[in-house]
Every structure is written in structure tokens, then in C-alpha cells.
Image (cartoon, rainbow, N blue to C red; front, side, top):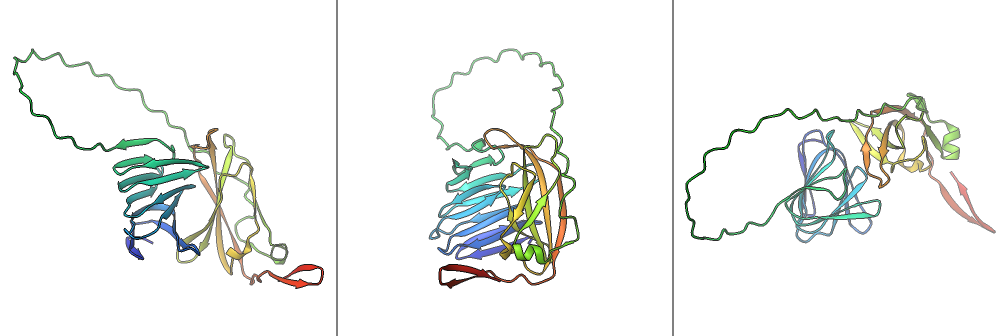
Amino acid sequence: MSGVVLDFDGNQIELEDNSLILITVSSTGQLQIDLSSGTVNLTSAEDSGNINLVIDGKTIEAGQGTVLTASSVVEGPMLIVSEGTVIVTEDGSTVEVDAGSVMSLDALGTIIEQSEPEIEPEIEQVVIEPEPPPAPPPQRTTPPPVQTASPLPTPSNMQPASGYRIGPTQIRTRRLDFTWAPVNGANAYILTLYRQTEGQQLILRTDPLPQNEWALTDFSILDIGTFTWRVEAITRNPNGTIERRGEIAENTFTVDIPIPEVQLHSAEGGLYVSQ
């Protein structure tokens, strides 16, 4: 999606160019927006319930009458709160962000800009004294260049390889294993799964994985078509904050036979599964 405005029960969702989101509504009617890339502007209605905005593994809870902007860009996820107060949650930690704040989501709890209320200046008598002679200009020194860490390399030896086709064995066992070679300097990995339609629709994103493997067992998210899976190596500190990201590697696989639904049947002595 790009350059569009969506209205959900009075909640305005504006997408800037080259933005990708996934919108879901729970059985209780709660609206959730998963931002994969780009920028989204959200204005929640005065009579709406709380809205969850998920970006880079963090959940932003916006209440009634909240106006905010969230971005997932190369420089790092950012949150700007114009009106209202939001709650940012990650791995059990929460931070309250007030209106007028700009927050770096890669450093949970660090507000890098906070507006202050305007205070009427007090009128007082001022005695004008002669100005002292100007001081000599300070000597300018060139600051040392900022050292930035280079991205971690892309994972190699990704399996299943590109062009892989899901076969009867995976459908019967309902298990598809994803593996890749470890990356030096990484202590976690993030796997994402996309469905290829006119663009790419995000259907799954894992939490940071401590190992270089993961298994898909919920085949209900698959259907006939082509899928892209990506892996990114990351480095996290002991608090769980991502300190270094990596280059993303991707492969594709295809499902060209129908995936039957799993059904439970009762029988004397218990339940049994049929497909």
C-alpha cells in the first residue's frame, strides 16, 4: 500500500509512500496494526477502544484521541506522539510516552526529545549595563569521525533452497524446517515469511531466535502460491535491545497442492485426527 487513508470505525490510518502494514481485528473488536516498513500516521477516535501498533517486536498501545506517527526505516524505528499518551511494551518492559515526545524504539525508554509547557515570562525591571568587549572567537577543532558498526553479513546455506516445493511429507507431518549457517558476531536471528501477491504480504515474523533454525507447524497460514522467507542476523545486549542489525537473506518456496484442514473426530476411548 502507498499514499492511502483508511477509516476503521472513525480511526484514521494514513500510509505514506512505500509503506507495508497488516491490519487485524480480534474477536473482541480490538484493532491491531503490524507495520513492516515505511511510515503510518494514526488518529484514534474519541470513542474507540485501545489500538495496538506493532513495530519491530514492540507493541505501542494508543488510547482514545491519540495522534501519532510511527516509522520503520533503515535509520531505525521511530515514534512521534503529537496528542495523547501511549504505552510502549517490549519483553515485559513498558514505557509511557507523552504528547510532544520523539522516541527511538531501538532504545526502549530513551526519549530523545520532550516538549515542555509554555510559561508566561515574568515582567521585571531591567537595568541596562554597558556591554563588555567581545571575547575572541573560540578555536574550532574538527571532531573525530563517528565510528559506526557495519551490518552483520547475510546468513548462508539457507534451507529450503529457493524454488523448493512443499511435498506430501511436509503436508502429512505439518512441519517445514528452516535452517541456515551461523553468522559470526550474531547471537539471535529474526525470520519473516511473506506471501507473494501483487506485492509481498507479511504473514509471520518470529521473535529473536537464539538458534539458527526454526520449524513452521501452523500450515493454516499457507495456501497454493509462492512464499518468500527471510532471515536477518542480529546482536542483542543482555537487556534484549538490538545493538547491531544484519544484511537480510531470502529464499522462496512454492505450495502447488491443496493443504487439507486438520479435523478432530470423537471416538470411543478418545479423539483422533484426520486430514
